[in-house]
Length: 253
Ligand code: 13P
Image (cartoon, rainbow, N blue to C red):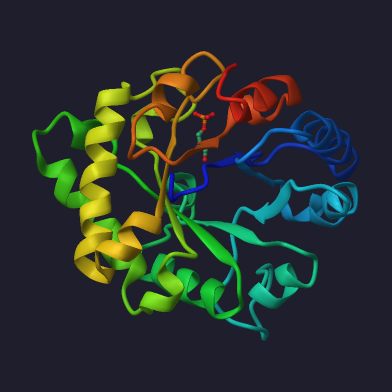
């Protein structure tokens, strides 16, 4: 397969630095010998340094959950791309539905963050996905998620594009235990790959990773990963326990 599967844990607003350190250590130990899978953990900002320390001699990579688009300045409470790279952060989640919902992140803000991340060598994991009412209102959700991907990647160069990934996270599947069926995920991923292909060309689209997120667990990951357009998972709740996250990175085996 041209695309190395990517399994990322989004710890959201969980874990103190010390709790994160312990979880990272267990993930690191469980990931030894996982094979051709890229594993990323995304702790809260306050735990990045501790987790970086635990992961120093491991193949597990470090991600952040958000980033601001300016390099420095009077932006109280924000964290810049150079602050993250200085800690050894390689990935950053951008535009999670929780940030869109609670912190009013628009497609335009998401795009600025994506471009700033890439300009500083960070790999953005761009989250898109429709809400339940949008899914139930016919085919409109397709244009909506297409539009989210197009907007997020606007102005990104072909050279940078394959460093980004998209996570298709239908909002109705997040934290609900209601996973998209493998067929539903496959349909969404295929249409998002078409968007990437239309924007950057077929070659880039073949390299571009599209992850699924929303109630991924050790029981459903295998079926999801069996879909050719599902290149990995962005895992919330099940990434907070090393045992389930390690099982997921082994595709439930
Ligand atoms: P859950 O796995 O808890 O549904 O969360 C998914 C998610 O939002 C990952 O970013």
